[in-house]
Image (cartoon, rainbow, N blue to C red):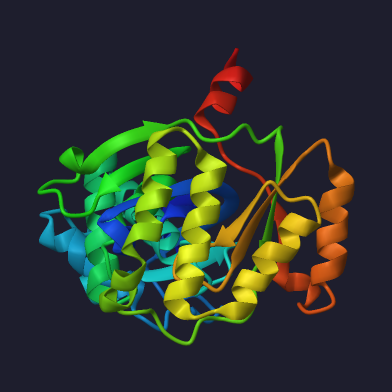
Length: 299
């Protein structure tokens, strides 16, 4: 068995669910993913219940890209190392597809633009049945840092970017993820219609630069879509314990909780409170990934 290509990416959380208004945005967070393309099966069992990686190869070929020299598509195998809990709304499918595409680029010595990578990632997720909107905003957030507001109905990936921002400074914020049990299913587009006005409020908040407010409003609206009363209670309890923002991410059920880094005691209190209801490994502490922070580090 030989590694023929390696790619990396990271997770993200929702700012705005694209099914709510047709506009979506996700924010990069530090949950690393590494995907390796192999010429033979790995000894470690691959967990890919939706055949996402098979759909990555199909979308790669459909876009006119070559296979690794000497291999048929059935001869490409995969190894995945991911810190993202799957089926929680933390963009595991987008991140794995992005990393797999980068691994194929490595394996074939190919170069793709960021928008081309996002296009293949989005198509892969739609074909695998793990996205109801194409997850273009998720793919951008897992490939790059910061956030992009996406028009999910735009004709091209390039024209779909409406706004973008560098993200929040990781030194200023603690990010807690209350992951809860895996979601049983993805909601239907029709489920979002009654909550259009709430998602529109989140969109307006993002357009006004109110990132944390957007995350919170969107999260409450998604709880409404899913009729997830426990999710709403988790968010409210986080606020009472000192969070500055809290809300469900993706189509749930993970709750993202944002606390100022100067108030470590609030983060510890939230972890202690939630550990009474969640297993320790379902409460993750991480940080944002910001373009501005990259620039600071390079100076």
